[in-house]
Image (cartoon, rainbow, N blue to C red; front, side, top):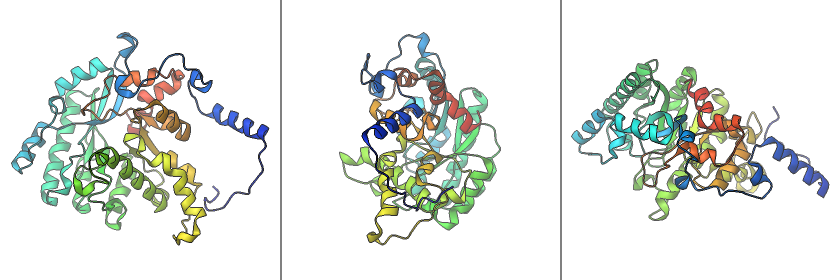
Length: 369
């Protein structure tokens, strides 16, 4: 493929050519007709207000790949270390969670720890024990409810050698279909350090997608309240995704799959500026990055959950990366949760193929479900 660093030859575009180009782009991206025509017959709600048209329309079919949990053995272990957890009961009680899933139209959840992952404040040895507890609980959850729960492998990332050992210990166990990692720890971008390379290589070899999530805590924050909590994930994911491209990591691991939560945070919206900075701002003195593919191709190397919360954001994201790169994620159980995950998509009146891809098809392909 053509190298991204080559500057395209400028061409003059008349009004007719501009309209024709716009029509071509519109044909390539599937959007609701009412939106494309500028006439929206029915309002499209923000995610927390989306409701199904009927109970029948709310049948369990969504696969939620951004679903947090707190296994009971893990909660007890954390309490013994002096870090008691205060979580929603549905994060620990699978029966209660199943009731919620049945009521809300969710067929399956891919379970991961939340932003309170313990790796930043426990020793590597304690981290190994906690990871083992969570991973074994994930296997048991899948065995108890094989059609409803799978889990991502948690690893103690502070020590990549121990992390790789734990990954290998559980890699082939039933119900574990991905690897869950923090974006960074105290702003340390550990994923790109040479010592962590064997972990990335093993994930690629196993075909286990990596699901990233930001860490809680002031040491990981990008701002103070009230800005911080709303912006931490957005900036953390943007830095992570950018580094995966500009470091050449995606070229080094061409089959590695990555899922960005919170719709990729700010990354989809600043991707154009990142490319511009790389190739059109030589005065900054940045090292010239030689990518194997055009920059925009790398945007589709990631999958993104649909947590834009505003409909305009989802339309933009789909126009940028395509419906085949979007998955359902609820971030449950947080305040003002998404009550009806399928209703979020159904209100757009997408074509059936795109609807099915987003609700479950992309997740089935990605996690081999």
